[in-house]
Image (cartoon, rainbow, N blue to C red; front, top):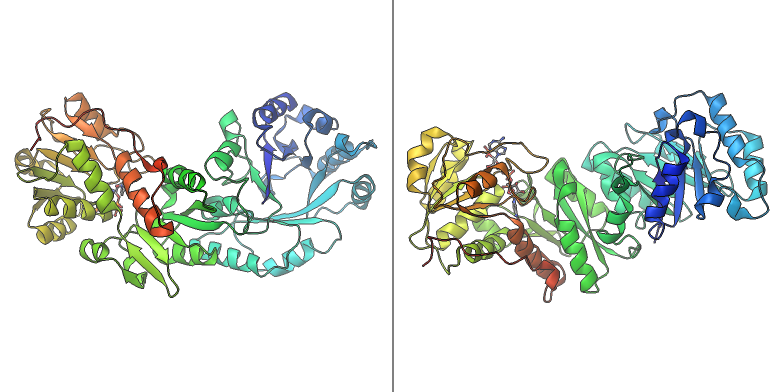
Length: 510
Ligand code: NAP
């Protein structure tokens, strides 16, 4: 288990102490980021450890090392020297740690630290890359006796994250801190225990303070979502693999909450990725036992699987994978998740006689089209890439068209049910309303697979026109419960139960 460190980025000492109070019961130590303080306060930090009442790391980080300190090295030296001076016999009144970069060697300061019990964290930051000379840099960081080496580097792809994780596993065990910064490095923040890191750093984001380094989480999320205080090296990893917007997904709260309720020692971690092959490499390096696959890799993953369920074969999209002894097995839980939430929304057993329009022809739309088809609906598929709309429609005997007013007559005919399955309107995706050229008449039942925001522009407009609407949250819950069954087996806990719909969609009763 790694200790949770809160990096304080206030402009004043008072702001830092207020943030510390907010998180005191959650964190094990704090890092005073002197570089974020107003210049007039930077020389006044000597008493901070007494005021904090928790172990404190002293850090004055230069801009070149991902900090915001712009003054010269002379000024930095004076700030550090003053902060460590007049050491007290009661160590709790002294800084417990000082973070000194690998090019900062001042024997007088290092001697003071040794004499008065301040541990040196010897750090190397690279905000742009994983340096080619990582072995030499690491060797240098580890050379001095008693220091805690810290390496914070920036993977530029999922493949680079995979190599960083693999490299970390070759290191001899010792006190250390290893961090991957930026989007691709995000999982390393949550996998601190797996990487053998002594601390895992966080920022007081929910207190409205800036992020101390790219990829930091708030301690509340660390603990309530990612159960960081319970995660050890042995904790099983499950991954969420998708594009860069996945760090906003609600599935980590669902799965991690369910693992906790079911007493399963596992953690579910987002891996923002740049390709299906890249995330497979990254999750294999981390020893993950399974993953949820989301936008935009549900199709790209299929040729990389060793085996696939019949749903994956039929639909041509995979949203769940499980590690077997010989490779990855693929499943599609969107299909059952969507079917259950749609039928509940409509209050029906089947869709015979329903004329439905499906907007989108991506991975999720394939599951939607299969559900419409197997439940007896007739359908129209509209998509930006018309060839994809045609190919999906032909598979199910549906009509197809472009997503613009050339499809107005068709959609008017197929408007009992309108299902939005593009990523347009999703938080972090392209903004807008894919059907802005269509006026709802208020009798349509409207389903949007997006659940964040709770109501997209499209769904809001439908609701304002008097339509019954449903977002994708219940679908997320039902498909996630199915993933739980696939990954760990047994009855999924109640964490996956979605809130009950207020009422059923009018006008579509059997
Ligand atoms: P995908 O495979 O990447 O497909 C994306 C779809 O959106 C394609 O039809 C694409 O059209 C269309 N699209 C993207 N950008 C567009 C733009 N600017 N203008 C018009 N069309 C655009 O993604 P997916 O896996 O199908 O997921 C789609 C959405 O469903 C996402 O928002 C996802 O979060 C949501 N979803 C929700 C759940 C749930 O549990 N609630 C489950 C699965 C998916 P082209 O074919 O022309 O590129």
